[in-house]
Amino acid sequence: MKPLKVRSMFDVQALRQDFPILSRQVHGKPLVYLDNAATTQKPQAVIEALVHFYQHHNANIHRAIHTLGEEATAAYEETRAKVAQFINAPRPETIVFTRNATEALNLVAYAWGRHNLGPGDEILLTEMEHHSNLVPWQRLAQEVGAVVRYIGVTDEGTLALDGLDEIIGEKTKLVGVTHVSNALGTINPVREIVAAAHRKGALVVVDGAQSVPHMPVDVQALDCDFLAFSGHKMLGPTGVGVLYGRYELLEAMEPFLTGGEMIRRVRLDGATWNDVPWKFEAGTPNIADVIAFGAALDYLSALGMENVRAHEEALTAYTLRRLRQLEDIIVYGPKDASQRGGVISFNYPDIHPHDVGTILDREGLAIRAGHHCAQPLMRRLGVTGTVRASFYIYNTPEEADALIEGVEKVRAFFGDASR
Image (cartoon, rainbow, N blue to C red; front, side, top):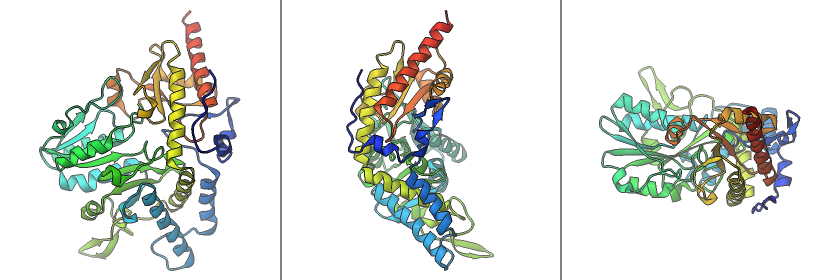
């Protein structure tokens, strides 16, 4: 089959030159990096932004009145403004920096949940959530006496949303939903879910870790109350997460962590808190990586998120078509690439995913094998794990072909071994 010409507005081959790691070899083979749902590679511009900060502007922020401190503070807050613009948040103060999406979701569970949920209140999640949007709510429910309920997953890998207005009950106080499944790639109808939740007076927290890096996301259009995502999944450094929250909700919430910087005044008999969002950013934050994340946002904004989405959708459609031509392969999730992100999970029924991953690694292919921090979903699928390939802006049809060739080698190896 001839490689598909990807429908995008950027030159992928030229773009690949911006990513130093893509030129390396693994086991003597060119690296084919298809583990982007776990973390993405970094362009030279992001790497240079990180180095530049340490070489020219390194200082703590929000405290010093000297030049370096003022420069560092300005650059840090400039990134906050860039994040707000990237997701169309109404103001920069609705953006809280955390270490990752996991911490952002825990912040909501701790700072909002412990003060607004009690015995008998219901938390509605889905069976396809990442553990980061499951475990904090399970733990909270145990502590305050709330009840966790779940929206099921259909055999097609979509949410079972028939009768949504009945699924979201009068006792439902919070709905947690992933925008795009990290294991199936399913794009969920978040706007519809938010509207139904708000009709019942419930808030909605959205896990955007697999959507914000890959498609246009507008928090005002979604009308969500909270949105969490991570910088490292969108070309940025590790150690930077984002929580978007409605300003009035953030203002009413108590701090998650306490100590330096998040205070307004401290006395021996108590303390008062800083303004939003700084009351949620205790201590010295990850200054350099936040600033370098700003360079990642610039890079993606220059490409255009509509173009990022078009590139991934075309590449996903091509890979799905090729995979489904292979004998015995089971592919999970929606059949139509327009209904999924750039994530494809599959299995050979008689070969463990880890064995597939090991052989593919010897071919230079970096994929993920396992439960993808979605064990309840794996049980729903009736498997212990899957093989997952996930795409980003620098992946090509030729790399999709390399994946298919690698998978065929896996089948040949185990076919020969069984003889």
